[in-house]
Length: 337
Ligand code: PMP
Image 1 (spheres, protein in one colour):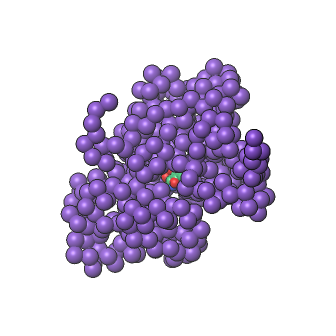
Image 2 (spheres, protein in one colour):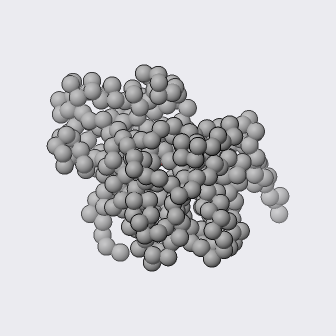
Image 3 (cartoon, helix red, strand yellow):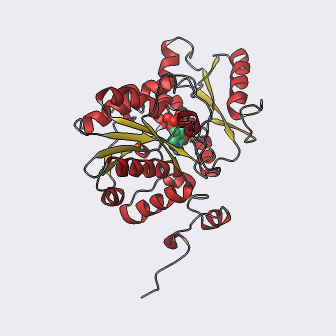
């Protein structure tokens, strides 16, 4: 292990961890790329770094400049941390429905936080559209200028996975990987990894939460209606990051299927993960069952679970949503000796 030069240098090269329960259940090796070990505790540190570097290289982001972005939270944390390490100010626009923990973390990282109602893209106050307008305004008024990170349609995001995540997975598995799957927020991770692994014959699948439109866009099939408490994933359009990508398969995954996996991994394997990781692992298990025993399937462990203590790990919240509450979370405690 060498000394990392700075924060940027500490992003990526995350370990690939074998998930014992899911592997034993399917007879395959289900491996999770531990993106929660990035400095900002999520996969989005990679995109944040590449977006900032690209904007600097193109001369758009100048010393002391401001980075503006609309985000479900993780990209905001990544941009704020990488931004701080390079002397940039960040302004983050977030839908008010996202977890309090992510909002607190963004503020803690020194970013300015603007909360907007959780409204669809068609509404001008949607977090993405609001952030674009705010960036244009700040570009006029800020002394050192401002840029809009535009993670959905800025392919510097996907490039982070073309140059980082994809090659890392290939190298770490010694080229033995048979399948890869994850969910889509911007599509940077899925399409970027696919760009590297599909040409090597690896099967790449979309894992799509309920309420997301991508499964239908790719398969033409109408999925069951429903929603998801997971954050940061789900998409209704082909973003620029997804442009040119075609999945080999697509799985529609319910919270009822995904969340017990998250609870089991915390209880039995010490892995504290967010909800999107559960969707991803459930997808990897579907792929494993389709392929049959003996295969190696890789997925993404997107972020750390403490980010969702008030929701995913809150019995009252789960019960209110009609979701299963694991016994150990529901106040079951050991009797005193
Ligand atoms: N999981 C979480 C928790 C996220 O915040 C995100 C990004 N919004 C994703 C998964 C999806 O990653 P991508 O944007 O690369 O599709």
